[in-house]
Image (cartoon, one colour):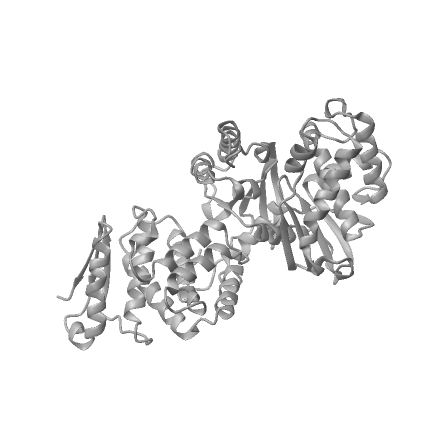
Length: 509
């Protein structure tokens, strides 16, 4: 991995093992691949039907039973991943964890069981990763592609060309949720299917004109419901890897003829798919009708493959999509770019100093430094709303935006740092026992103070140390006399930290 943000990146060597874990609403999946000349070859694939999407209670909390099922599955995955470099493993959770009010409880247990961090990603980020995975398994061409992925509690729509997604959408309609809502009794009736299809189409209305059938040349369906339906249809004489409207209505009639899920017997339909096939089928029929699709081609790639290839980009600082997202946000909200870069540079130098005596795992310091860098570039994003309480406005923007490449936990960190770059620290209402966050925060606040004149300060002779609940900033002896305003602001900063039971000391000996 790279030594600092300015060094050239070092990509994983050929034959390196990479692992992706997709914590879906219906199933948890583990994909292990080996890097081979820029391509990733499958080594192992594990899947377990955990079905957390059907276990949110009336308060939108995961039930104890569903948490236990998920943790047991992740513990098994974790055993297989022992010895993996943390930078070569990514685990992401999707719609169910996005909705669950007690997701933090699950994420904490999941990290312990799996042995690696678990990120909750936005629907837009999920869609981007799905397209990245699907596009890697398709022939390269200039065709305009529509990609659809019906998950357990959400459905993603993506328009793209080549390896690049251009428009993405994630809607709250999925096979688990729709099966519970419209086929909860297990009965298959004409009325239930009609209501489920109409309800789905009413949600598709929000897609707007981007996904009009004139905007794409060929439609692909990825994983989940699409794969299950295609597996059944091919067993009854339909073309392989192809779904037509005729085939969908034939399958609908078969379910109606069966009348109840307990009596359902179809070649190619796996047991774990039976409880959710009706909901997924009704959504797929609604998509065909709404988008005027005649033929849907079954894609081989999926979210987990997108994660694997995205890891290669994240290892390469020059092409990390998150950098481009930060730049777009900064331009959109008219951030003072030269000043933001100055603050980011100063914050980065301070973070290097404060990290000198901290033991980090390989690559860990760079991960934290990168988040501080992004937060510094965006710390004044809220000024576009109002210079007064700009930190409040900026934090709100970052908490509620969905820039490509970022997980929700990463955005929450950037939001907290933006909220805390100035003003009272108590308003953050966060865990100040997290020493990494405290290190990032003090470096950002000190950088903003030192750059208050919107010029690059001279940091020669500066030292920054971190020990337990004490932060020590050493400055040159002559510095207070040369920069009285900056010294006054630093002195005021020491008072701000005292109010959260921390000590920031300024020494000029």
